[in-house]
Image (tube, rainbow, N blue to C red; front, side):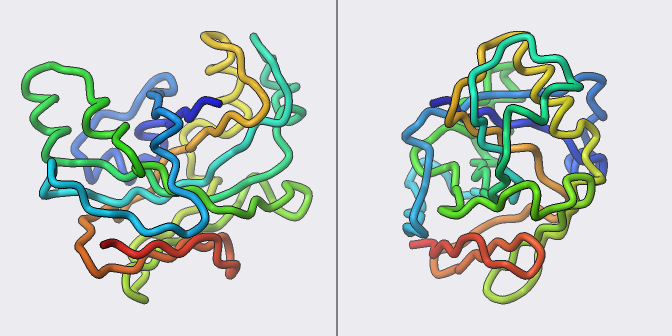
Length: 203
């Protein structure tokens, strides 16, 4: 099972990070131990002092495919979930300054929150899936799939040029603006529409 994450897929997030808009999808990987499931708490690690939340729609692949044509990509997933890509921003900045890869800032254990439930796509308008993140009952992020630079079918077609997608693989599709730091004691709640998808306590 692969965890594939898309970077800078919302223009407003790219702007808040002072980053250029990508001409092609940007993706990176997280290991399976990054998954944080079943509303388990996230324990703030001792190697960072600046971990940020990034709430994202998550696509779960339902059959194997390679070199998938974009017009057929919708056959390779049938459910949408919600997750968080936790990022150690201080480590990421250090990596950027040294020209190093970012894995240490993105791929640590527990850095990929995932909802237990996934919503069938036939219950959603794929072109306009609204989602949000609340930090201690205050809404801090709000996004919709229509604002993605690269839509889900485009992402599947692009990624599958480089690697075979297999049943159970997860694609984190990018985050909108509003990312920010977490602190011990925080409670993060993610929603698709009005439906609560996950609840994570920071310890």
